[in-house]
Image 1 (tube, one colour):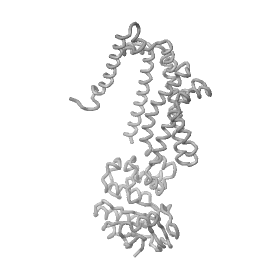
Image 2 (cartoon, rainbow over the protein chains, first blue to last red):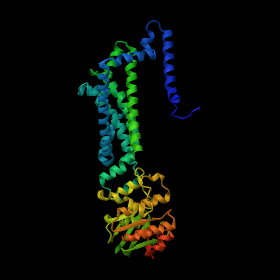
Image 3 (cartoon, rainbow over the protein chains, first blue to last red):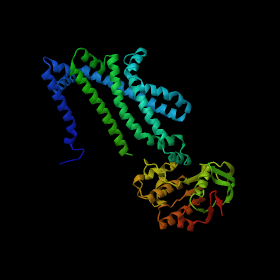
Image 4 (cartoon, each protein chain N blue to C red):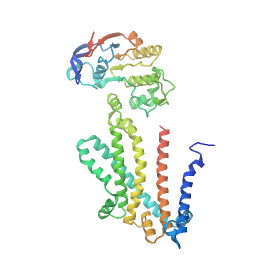
Length: 256
Length: 193
């Protein structure tokens, strides 16, 4: 028997199990609720797959996906840049740490829905998902980069000083490689956060070309299979992006 | 000539240097020999400008023109053997990396990572990096720890051929035997005997 973690059967077993559990649950709902019960409460996986295929044939489907993707990636990039810059600032300057750290902690702790509604008051509805994704990513990246900067080996920093590396070379050869592992882990985590919060913002703000708009409409018209189809798409895209990110970094590491 | 003039240094209650005055010739290979913890490493670090004396002065030594080999290898884990050397060379001289590796008998190891090297190889790589950095004074702290005596002797002769004044701290017999002058020290506080 092949016990390798790369064995395809081993990889397929967990999703197959959960698909089976979904199928069984939908069947039980179907048995206990009469009429369109199961379609309204918990549709069969096959019904969702069929609806997803139908949607994929519509032009608006891909337009909405790319629009949402663009907003969330823009939020991710903005949040990452701001988080990294603020981490450098709060580590370098004591007054900046005293001033900014509490504010960033408040952003991390505050309910996302409050931010969505506030940002909606201040900006256009298409901008809200970008801002919200960025706000969710920022504290995660700030925390990881700050922790990374503080844990850089002081002996390597002393080496950089004694060997006259200069600021840019010290950043490139000591700081960036030292904090790369924690940054990569935080970026992968925050990608999922950006997706969840960005789509939630779309559901509340309803930009016309967006996944969130379709999720809201499906819920309003009780189109549960469509709601599931969009949700499956969000999860699939999030996993795909995370996989691409990890593969890109894996390749970079192998290449030195 | 490196002149130490009434240099004082303490860490809390521990006095490492107490009005230390001495003149060290800035030529050839000079070895400091003394028990562990007597302050030899601190003296090297002070000459490299990494530790400031609390009082007194050092003359005849510009920390910006010294190259120090630390007691630990301090290799960058994410840089290959060749890159470790290239990193300290000016942009126009990166091609010299192989000649510095040759001096410490690490030719052929250019593409390996520090984690793949033995203790002695890591030590020689750190030494090659300090030599490549160069300057007007080499400060070598235990340069041959984990290096076999015959190889250490060959490498020391190549260091001598560079004609850069060298101050080294070592417990290795080979280094002490081949140095131009051995200065016994004791402490703390550090004293030249």
